Length: 322
Ligand SMILES: Cc1ncc(C[n+]2csc(CCOP(=O)(O)OP(=O)(O)O)c2C)c(N)n1
Ligand SMILES: [Mg+2]
Image (tube, rainbow, N blue to C red):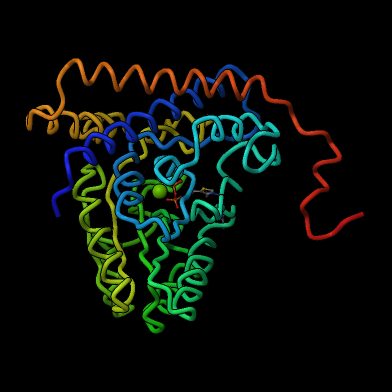
């Protein structure tokens, strides 16, 4: 599937924006301005942006903690993201959380991420089956990690989705680690996608650092789901390029492994391809980079100037009032 040049440049800009917002989050954490934990999506830009690009406007997505790119592609603004991480009232969770938990917006087709992993998988299956019941040609896509793949809910959801021929796509982001646990201590198979055979659905392995390859396999899986042919399990292989969260220096990750993956950086690779095709000149690269930098600066100012919620607001919008 060939994308128009305009799309390629927009994908590039979203990947850069994802990284710039992510770097700013890391900086704000180190400045002591972010409470609790902050997860980084460094290295996951191709998966999140490429997959989100393959969705139609009425489809829904359930991103996880490393899928900042998917939130941005679907229309969440850098202002909303930084307000969220700084716990401000202008954020989507109205200051109730300091990271991507609760950063959903159903108007944009984004299911908010729930903390127990991988419970967004059954929720995504629920959304897909709602589309099926209403005979709407819509698809639900969920992300989950290699660690999350070991939980019972992942297996149960994939099996049930297969039996129901749900209009759903499941992307497992195999980034080699679940916190400090390397994949070889989690499972004894080479490819998590091979598990698809046990559910009776297609399983596809994709290079998670190649944005167009990700787009391509997700696009095919989305269209298959939309035709009523059922779900696909995609395993996108990548590397978590920072610690589990900003407080974790990942001393347990071998430096050579990180260095090898740094060579496969998804943004640098895509940029090189765009330059080779003559789509990206130095001037255009500069223009895009300054637009991205301005958006992140503007978002930081907006978030830092936004008020914190009042204590009593913690009681609003919950199931039980006191
Ligand atoms: C059921 C459950 N156990 C533990 C956690 C805490 N936790 C949050 S992220 C994470 C690591 C998950 O690893 P993986 O699924 O591979 O995703 P990654 O962080 O590598 O992207 C853990 C243990 C949780 N959120 N839910
Ligand atoms: Mg992982």
